[in-house]
Amino acid sequence: MGIPDIIIAVDGYSSTGKSTFAKLVAREFGFTYLDSGAMYRGVTLFALENGMIGADGAIDTEKLLPAMAGLDLHFGADGLQMGERCIEKEIRTLEVSSHVSPVSAIAPVRTWVDERLHAFSAAGRVIMDGRDIGTTVFPNAELKIFMVADAQVRARRRYDEMVAKGETPTLEDVMKNLQERDYIDSHRETSPLRQAEDAFVMDNTHMTLHEEVVWVLGVIQGKFGLLEAPALSC
Ligand code: DC
Image 1 (tube, rainbow, N blue to C red):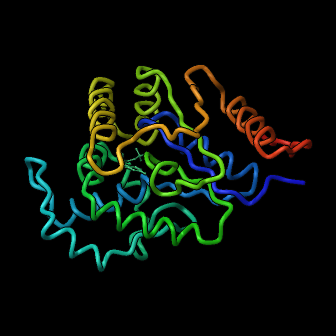
Image 2 (image 1 turned 90 degrees about the horizontal axis):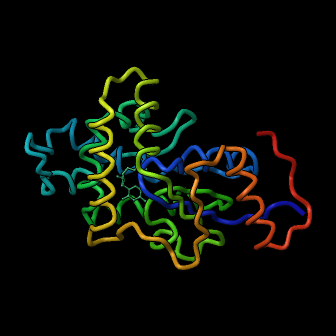
Image 3 (image 1 turned 45 degrees about the horizontal axis):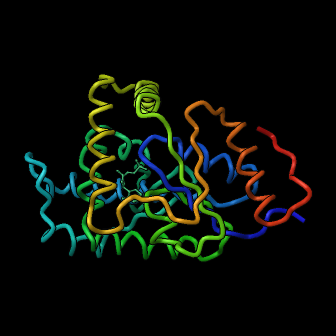
């Protein structure tokens, strides 16, 4: 018997490696991967491109919220799309990163994203990462994982990722952005980042990706009583 058709919710602070882990698990175990943070980033890009975020960072919700009725964000083969346009690269810039937390703190934006996440997950067998997946989006997810890692290690990972994409941030700026987002994400009124009571905690500060997959496989086997493990290719 293989791994059942469950929903796996992966939550945690920024740059704890949630998406890398979730993508790998999806590939290894035949799940659909959904990146909920990309949706908030997509809304943020839309707001920036349409002049709905001022130079002072103020968000014009009176314009943004009604305009979202005509916004089409969905996942295509290469990541997030806005209509026909692939925006996977644009949503990862430091500019989007520095505005996304306040945008994601707006309650109607969260409702809009949650509705779409549910629709995208209708077929099941999904692994989704974010901040409130196990607490709000899928409180009944069969498996919840909460990822943590040392802040210095997280900043370094995000920095290396950005440099690899041709950006030129300073490590200091990346660290500052990370700390600001940690604070806003865990202190906002609507759906703050917190560990679900029934989540398994993974501290991956010193773990390799292979060790992460072996870890989750052990958790799944224990939780669902699977005697046989699928062979891993990673
Ligand atoms: O995972 P990420 O860094 O791409 O997420 C971008 C932002 O979106 C993050 O700062 C907080 C927000 N977010 C959220 O509020 N809830 C989620 N489920 C996912 C992301």
